[in-house]
Length: 151
Image (cartoon, rainbow, N blue to C red):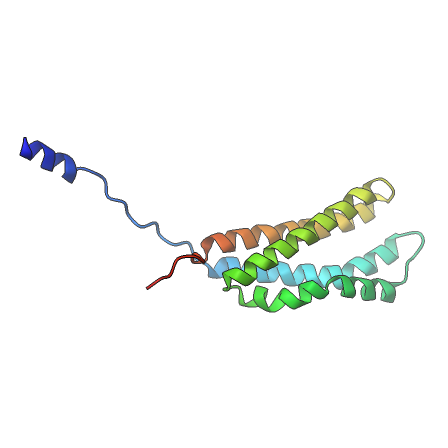
Protein backbone atom coordinates (compact mmCIF):
# COMPACT_ATOMS: atom_id res chain seq x y z
CA UNK A 1 0.00 0.00 0.00
CA UNK A 2 2.80 2.35 0.74
CA UNK A 3 4.22 1.93 -2.75
CA UNK A 4 0.96 2.89 -4.42
CA UNK A 5 0.63 6.02 -2.30
CA UNK A 6 4.20 7.05 -3.09
CA UNK A 7 3.58 6.51 -6.79
CA UNK A 8 0.43 8.63 -6.67
CA UNK A 9 2.24 11.48 -5.00
CA UNK A 10 5.11 11.37 -7.49
CA UNK A 11 2.78 11.56 -10.50
CA UNK A 12 1.12 14.78 -9.36
CA UNK A 13 1.88 17.60 -11.76
CA UNK A 14 4.04 20.28 -10.24
CA UNK A 15 3.09 23.88 -10.57
CA UNK A 16 5.61 25.59 -12.77
CA UNK A 17 6.18 29.30 -12.72
CA UNK A 18 4.64 31.05 -15.69
CA UNK A 19 7.15 32.85 -17.84
CA UNK A 20 6.86 36.57 -17.29
CA UNK A 21 5.72 38.55 -20.27
CA UNK A 22 8.02 41.38 -21.33
CA UNK A 23 7.26 44.81 -19.93
CA UNK A 24 9.40 46.96 -22.24
CA UNK A 25 7.27 46.55 -25.42
CA UNK A 26 4.14 47.58 -23.50
CA UNK A 27 5.95 50.60 -22.04
CA UNK A 28 7.02 51.64 -25.54
CA UNK A 29 3.51 51.21 -26.97
CA UNK A 30 2.01 53.14 -24.09
CA UNK A 31 4.54 55.96 -24.40
CA UNK A 32 4.12 56.26 -28.16
CA UNK A 33 0.32 56.21 -27.99
CA UNK A 34 0.34 58.67 -25.08
CA UNK A 35 2.55 61.18 -26.91
CA UNK A 36 0.53 60.86 -30.12
CA UNK A 37 -2.70 61.43 -28.18
CA UNK A 38 -1.28 64.46 -26.34
CA UNK A 39 -0.07 66.05 -29.59
CA UNK A 40 -3.33 65.21 -31.36
CA UNK A 41 -5.47 66.56 -28.54
CA UNK A 42 -3.43 69.72 -28.04
CA UNK A 43 -2.73 70.69 -31.66
CA UNK A 44 -4.38 68.57 -34.34
CA UNK A 45 -7.89 68.47 -32.89
CA UNK A 46 -8.34 72.26 -32.52
CA UNK A 47 -6.79 72.89 -35.95
CA UNK A 48 -8.92 70.25 -37.68
CA UNK A 49 -12.11 71.42 -35.97
CA UNK A 50 -11.35 75.02 -36.94
CA UNK A 51 -10.86 73.99 -40.56
CA UNK A 52 -13.82 71.58 -40.76
CA UNK A 53 -16.42 73.45 -38.71
CA UNK A 54 -18.47 75.98 -40.72
CA UNK A 55 -18.36 78.48 -37.83
CA UNK A 56 -14.51 78.40 -37.93
CA UNK A 57 -13.71 78.59 -34.22
CA UNK A 58 -10.46 80.27 -33.20
CA UNK A 59 -7.45 77.96 -33.43
CA UNK A 60 -5.44 79.69 -30.68
CA UNK A 61 -8.45 79.65 -28.36
CA UNK A 62 -8.95 75.95 -29.07
CA UNK A 63 -5.31 75.17 -28.33
CA UNK A 64 -5.49 77.20 -25.10
CA UNK A 65 -8.72 75.44 -24.06
CA UNK A 66 -7.30 71.99 -24.75
CA UNK A 67 -4.08 72.97 -22.98
CA UNK A 68 -6.08 73.78 -19.85
CA UNK A 69 -8.07 70.59 -20.27
CA UNK A 70 -4.82 68.59 -20.47
CA UNK A 71 -3.18 69.95 -17.28
CA UNK A 72 -3.81 66.68 -15.35
CA UNK A 73 -2.41 64.73 -18.32
CA UNK A 74 0.72 66.90 -18.31
CA UNK A 75 1.13 66.15 -14.60
CA UNK A 76 1.02 62.36 -15.06
CA UNK A 77 3.17 62.36 -18.22
CA UNK A 78 6.42 61.66 -16.27
CA UNK A 79 4.81 58.54 -14.77
CA UNK A 80 3.74 57.41 -18.24
CA UNK A 81 7.23 58.06 -19.62
CA UNK A 82 8.88 56.08 -16.82
CA UNK A 83 6.17 53.42 -16.93
CA UNK A 84 7.40 51.36 -13.99
CA UNK A 85 5.54 52.61 -10.91
CA UNK A 86 2.36 50.58 -10.49
CA UNK A 87 0.86 53.13 -8.10
CA UNK A 88 1.29 56.07 -10.46
CA UNK A 89 0.16 54.00 -13.44
CA UNK A 90 -2.97 53.02 -11.53
CA UNK A 91 -3.73 56.70 -10.85
CA UNK A 92 -2.93 57.43 -14.50
CA UNK A 93 -5.32 54.69 -15.56
CA UNK A 94 -8.13 56.20 -13.50
CA UNK A 95 -7.46 59.64 -14.98
CA UNK A 96 -7.35 58.35 -18.54
CA UNK A 97 -10.63 56.54 -17.95
CA UNK A 98 -12.14 59.91 -17.02
CA UNK A 99 -10.68 61.40 -20.21
CA UNK A 100 -12.05 58.44 -22.18
CA UNK A 101 -15.51 58.96 -20.74
CA UNK A 102 -15.44 62.68 -21.52
CA UNK A 103 -14.19 61.98 -25.04
CA UNK A 104 -16.96 59.42 -25.53
CA UNK A 105 -19.60 61.92 -24.41
CA UNK A 106 -18.23 64.57 -26.79
CA UNK A 107 -18.22 62.02 -29.63
CA UNK A 108 -21.79 60.99 -28.80
CA UNK A 109 -22.93 64.63 -28.79
CA UNK A 110 -21.19 65.37 -32.09
CA UNK A 111 -22.92 62.45 -33.79
CA UNK A 112 -26.19 64.36 -33.60
CA UNK A 113 -25.09 67.75 -34.85
CA UNK A 114 -21.86 67.64 -36.79
CA UNK A 115 -20.52 66.60 -40.14
CA UNK A 116 -18.97 63.18 -40.70
CA UNK A 117 -15.49 64.68 -40.85
CA UNK A 118 -15.87 66.24 -37.39
CA UNK A 119 -17.20 62.95 -36.05
CA UNK A 120 -14.12 61.26 -37.50
CA UNK A 121 -11.83 63.81 -35.79
CA UNK A 122 -13.44 63.11 -32.41
CA UNK A 123 -13.49 59.37 -33.18
CA UNK A 124 -9.72 59.38 -33.63
CA UNK A 125 -9.38 61.11 -30.25
CA UNK A 126 -11.59 58.46 -28.66
CA UNK A 127 -9.65 55.66 -30.37
CA UNK A 128 -6.30 56.97 -29.18
CA UNK A 129 -7.57 57.26 -25.61
CA UNK A 130 -9.01 53.78 -25.79
CA UNK A 131 -5.62 52.46 -26.94
CA UNK A 132 -3.87 54.30 -24.08
CA UNK A 133 -6.23 52.67 -21.59
CA UNK A 134 -5.73 49.21 -23.10
CA UNK A 135 -1.92 49.55 -22.96
CA UNK A 136 -2.14 50.83 -19.39
CA UNK A 137 -4.25 47.87 -18.29
CA UNK A 138 -1.92 45.38 -19.98
CA UNK A 139 1.17 47.06 -18.54
CA UNK A 140 -0.33 47.11 -15.05
CA UNK A 141 -1.06 43.39 -15.39
CA UNK A 142 2.55 42.68 -16.37
CA UNK A 143 4.21 44.79 -13.67
CA UNK A 144 5.08 43.13 -10.35
CA UNK A 145 2.31 42.98 -7.80
CA UNK A 146 1.96 46.00 -5.55
CA UNK A 147 1.05 44.04 -2.42
CA UNK A 148 3.70 41.32 -2.51
CA UNK A 149 7.17 41.98 -1.23
CA UNK A 150 9.79 40.36 -3.44
CA UNK A 151 12.95 39.14 -1.74
